[in-house]
Length: 339
Image (tube, rainbow, N blue to C red):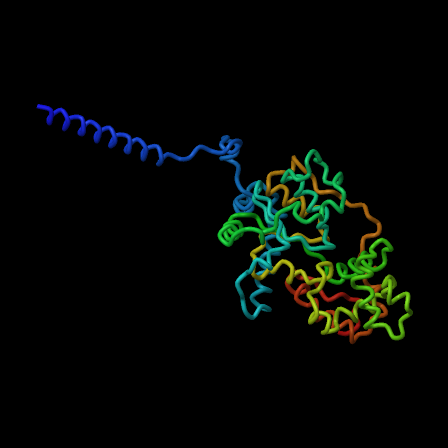
């Protein structure tokens, strides 16, 4: 008489376990609840910057046309002047800053307003703390390593996902104006003693006949001509890569390997910066700082610096920066004498 009772108990236990398994799988198939702050209807409906760019109904059409033209010119130049494509490696991505909150990838180029763009991204990512005005962030703080994450810090799958789905932008500048700006900032300012010691002393030692002992020790009076000799000397790049302040943009940001959605230009900085912030949907949260600098390096100023450079060295220097001229549609400066 006890066997049927035991059988019934075992059957009931099995049935209960079966119901619990069904209940578990039913719940596990439901979408996971959103993390705090990410489940609002506003967040779900908000389009990514990349979607906004290619849907194209929220930004002025004339501005869109300009940037579409720049993308097409860059793609055509890459097809024409790049012989062999290669796979990106993490080393290539050290200049690409990531804003995961807004879906942005920014490749920073020194001497092309990168300090202000880093300040803006510090505000957007919350790194700036209470600061909402980018100019309230000290310039040296904007360049502190680790304040902003770079794409090289992510795993391969995370890198690929961000390259596919984030808005990628870079700002470029007329190559020789950028080069003169770098020279003026790093070699003619008395406070840049680290650059004088690191590079100035080497330049004086190699490219100045009969240097004075003080110049060899301090390296603080490098002429632009000596700087040019240093750049075109094959031994320079055999020893080490160029410093980022005079490295070519195509070597810093790899525009033929990374498909940039926006190529901003220093010559139209305010308009292009506003365009990026509009695409990101943050133009009401932060403004790109406007500059009233009267000391900005211009084309006329660059012409003065190149006046004493011989046609032979002008040609060698142009060949060194040729890809930046071609990829970003800059003409050969009229002041060059080698043509």
